[in-house]
Amino acid sequence: MHEHKHNQCKRKVKHRKNVMKLIIFCITVGISLMFIYYQNLRKEIDARQKWLETVLTGEKKWILENQGPEGEFYMNGSKAGDVNPYFACMAALGLLAETKNCPITETEKKAVGRYLDWHIGILLETDGKMGIYRKKSGKLIYKEKADSEDGYLGMYLFLMGKYLEKTESTDLPEYWKKGISLALKKIQSLMQDGITQVSEENTTVYLMDNLEVWKGLYELEHAGLKDVQAIREMRNKLQAQIEKLFWDDANQRWRIIENSNLYHQKEFYPDGVAQIYPLIYEFPVKEKKKQKILYKQFTERFQWQKLNKKRNGFL
Image 1 (spheres, rainbow, N blue to C red):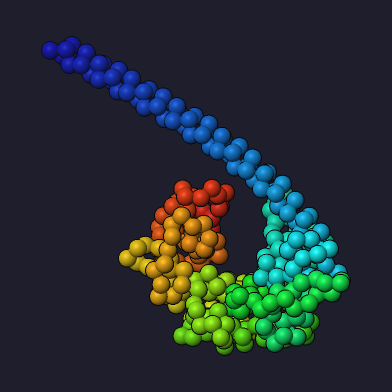
Image 2 (cartoon, rainbow, N blue to C red):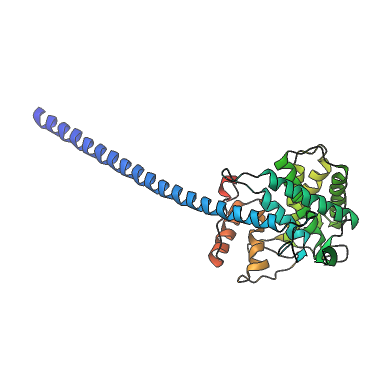
């Protein structure tokens, strides 16, 4: 009897040892597979990063080549073409983009500073009503009015805030201060119940324009300026209204225009792009899963380079 129990105990111990060996083996294999997976993922990410940096370098070179003598950026070359301040601000923002391996150069910073000089000069000259300009006989002439005053002002403030952050500038020229003040005043005049309309004449309210204004206010607020209380209050008011007015809870998507359900899911712009615009500008939505779903839908419908927003907690 005693010997039988002893043999049972030996078998149990042996069985447990075998089970433990199997568990350790499975864990080791699992860790090895995870290591291989993340190594391959790292290689894929590194390859994509290298490709993006190649694109970034090429785009910056092209943007610099399209800068005119007064600092303006042309849409299709500095020898001819139009200057659209909205897209010119985007081009200047491109020069301020950087990665660990591709930091901003002094040449790029100076180019953006020259552009801001030009932009602010026109902004003050037109009392905040910038248009689109065409080069003729070596001179820029007014071509047509801007299609959205609020969006143009928002992009200007976005660029200004980002430039001040990247250059750590705090001692601004007096006319730069006047330009900022005028833009804020104009945005305030376009605000109705905390949301901006296209212009004084056009009372249409667009999601994308308001997100551009929000981003401009946000960047300026965090640019290191001394007195930003009024900017913060304006931005907070706008932030509260955007999700309230534009989120269509019944259809689980963003409205492109206030009080409108117009939406064509196969249209890339503005319908498709509008759905990820809050993500692009890092607008803080209440439920992140909404953005995850919308972004997944967007990438399934349209060919697109995936945005790296996970590190910022936006996806």
